[in-house]
Length: 276
Ligand code: KIV
Ligand code: NA
Image (tube, rainbow, N blue to C red; front, side, top):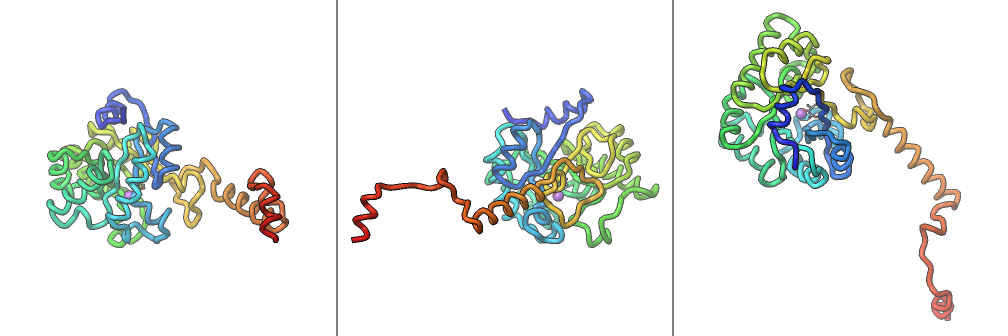
């Protein structure tokens, strides 16, 4: 049985913290799932950490569906949440519903995530009414990076803090089952967490959130272009991979790869006959 949205809500009711991670492909989803992570997010961070774009803005719905399918095939127990990319939920309700439905119907995800609070609450309400669970995402919303003038901490002034709180309340009211709080002061995240009934999932939002989410490529040191301040460092995959690749290339060059155990043989008589 996969994680349900009720189980996510119950984490908050029971005061149990929970870890969420991103994944973008089948083998990574298998590993994350087997570690017992209850929710896997197929984030549009795909654009940065897998596709090599310098923001999430170029990511398309087809990119997201393609990778979400792979993650769903790899995850047996985790809830899979698909991240709706830029401009796939802003235009109108019909477009939003059709795009969100693709994540459930075509890709096999159990929920979607989208960025924004007050301004997307009507869309969230409609999705939820139609049976599509929604995870919100407020604070620093990377799809608005141009409008925000960079990756800046959000919600520090009283006006900005009120806006983030209003966004959280609007999502709760609209029926979102959880909300990501990204890059806001820990004090504000803790306050919001105490003021809404749905779980908060922090990234760069301190210890006071109900759960935490991390981009797996940052967490395990696979993506090295830029490491955000909020990224945990729990692995050095890029170094491990470089060593394996260099060792392989050296063994090819010095003639020690492939060894006998990697090779196939045949009856020498056949080769003899081939010579004549
Ligand atoms: O795209 C993503 O990975 C995200 C998480 C950082 C919350 O939105
Ligand atoms: Na995202």
